Each structure stands twice: as C-alpha cells, then as structure tokens.
Length: 439
Image (cartoon, rainbow, N blue to C red):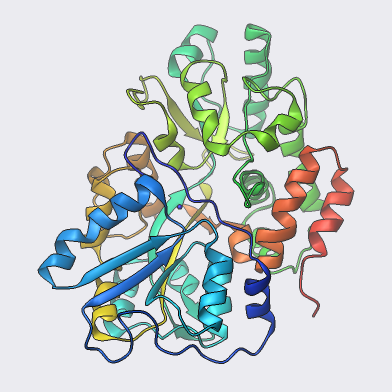
C-alpha cells in the first residue's frame, strides 16, 4: 500500500464510513455492470479504483502502460484516500468501477458477500494457484468462490536504524525481543535521548501503524494459532495473551524515556505522520523505528539503504533466536464487471509479468512466486521478497485488515490513538472489543 524510490507516499486506508457499514449490514442487491468496461464486452476501456495515490499512482499506471497499448485497452485509474466510503456509495448506486484494488481482505469479503463482485476469470484463478501460496489465494476467496487475485505485498515488522550509529555505539542487531530491550537501554545511555520514534498520523486512518506493532507482538509472543483465533474473535482483545502484547509494546511507546525521538513527548506519536520518521532515522535524530518495507520510499533522496549504508533494517525478532514469523499486507483485486477487456486486465495483474514490471519501477514488492528478487532496486525490498518466498517463513496477513471493518479499521485504529493519549490498556481493550458485530 508512491513511488519514485524516494518520494513514495502510501495511500492511507480510510476508515469505513457510513456507506461501507451499510454495505456490510444490509441485503443490498448485486450491482449492475460498471464503468466503461461494462458487461457488454465491446469496450476497450477499463476503469480501476484504489487507494493508491500521488507518485505511486503514476508508477502503477506506468507498470501497465506498454501492455495496455499492445492490447489496445485504455486503463483509466482513479485513486482516492476515501476509497472505502466512496466505493460503497458507488456500488450501491449502480456506478462502480470495472476493477477495484482492495487494501483489506475483510472489505473485499464484504463486497463479495453482497454479490457486488464477479467471480474471477479462469485464467486469473490459474495464475493465482500457480504463482501464489494457498493463504494468499484464500484471501481472495469468499464462501468457496474465488473472486480475486493478490496484487502487491509488503512485510511489516522491520526495525530501521543507522549502521554507522550502531558502529559508533558499539551495538549489534538483536536476535531476540530481550536483546531488543537491552539495545534500547544501551542506546539511551549512549545518547541521553529516547532511542525510538513513531508516527501514527495518517489522515482518517490515524492509528493503523500502532495496530502493526500489536500484531507483530501477538504473532511472536503468542504464536500463529493464537493469532488466527484472535483474528476471528475466538480470542477477544481482552484476553491476557493480547494484553501481554499491549504491555510489551507499551514498554516502548508509552515510556517517555523511549519516545518520541525527534518529535516530542509520547502523545506526539499521534500527530506525527507515519512517513515522517524516516528522515529522522536518516539524520540520526532517531535511532530506531518500526515500520513496513514500504518505509524505504520515505527516506530523503540520496539516502543509501544498505547493510553498510546510511540506513538499514532488521526484522523484529522473536522470543527466541532464529524464529521466522512475520506479518504483512497487500491488495486484492476484485471486479464489478465481467467484460472481455476487464478479464484481460485482471489476468495481466495476476501474472509474474506485471509483478516484475511494477517491482522494477521501485518501492514495492509482491508475493508472486514468479517475481525475480533482483527486479527490486532497493536492497531491503529484495530481502522482503526473499522472506515472502521463503517456505520456512510463517506469514500472517495484517490482523486489522482481516477483521471486520468496524473493528480492524474502526475501534482498533481508534483504540491505538486513545491508548497513546493516555487511556488505560484495560479500557482500550474493552473499547476495541465492542466493535465486533453481535453474533
């Protein structure tokens, strides 16, 4: 979820508004054929709608430009930071795009459950089964029917730092969570300032970076089975295992001695844009920050991202050394039209050819197994691709994206903001849990 390599701007995942909530809660009829690529199969224009904006949207359009010209298809892309609300309104009003790029599997399932989406064409399903893992295919499946293939992907849980500063302080990359605590203390002793910086601000989606912290700790401390149960509310937010993750994250984010380096007190986390932490790591104002692989696109132009460069990153470790458990996210592509041109575009977007085209332009990765790691120009993105393709990696999709929108993009995001602002952990956990639909 922009992208020249240095000007990337991630489109925030807007809160699901009234229209989105209505969509999930009412028996809305199936949408008619949408857009210029509608169901008559005669148009060579296909409309795509998504959250991707600014320079990233330009690169997205560049990624398919040659293919579209060769196939005599005009692809019209529109990006919006109010995607969820607007898509719900357009679908209910009978004017959806031909294709939507969904940033959340839970939202994707909402639309599939209301018969707004068309089942994926045979070629798309073939590509998905060949080039994506079963977990990824499942994210595009609803009630036994495959509706859409994944698009891009990212790995979360990277801890970004300055290799030169680590050498200056005489510290090394930690192998366990306990080592990370010791590293934090050592850096603070050496600098006399907080070691960490964090930013939760993202417009209407403010708070989502905090959910990433919690998800990483739940997976590492409680394990994948508990994580899966938590996603399905078989284990509630008020469960002690989830509170343990909050307490561990709070040991960093709620401790004035630990944050918010370069920005202010603890509460400044909520007013700091999530991408603004990158320049502070690059200039040495902040020693450590937690963010996904896409942060590589937020560093100032000229920043050398390499193991011996200006900035590098290590994966948040587990309780024991050598554990390979990571969280991540990505997009699922769904169609409101079954026109011939739309089906051709869907097939291309699910292919290794498109994945290599887009990744070669910089700033993003994909879990498509046909992707060549060297297609990524950025070394940290090359490492991300290797993690995504490693069969020994335990991968779990971002929990807030899998939960119903009222929780994942609602009470969970809001709860993280309230938590940083001083609301007690127990109260926050109870508030978040209230977002789960009854029954």
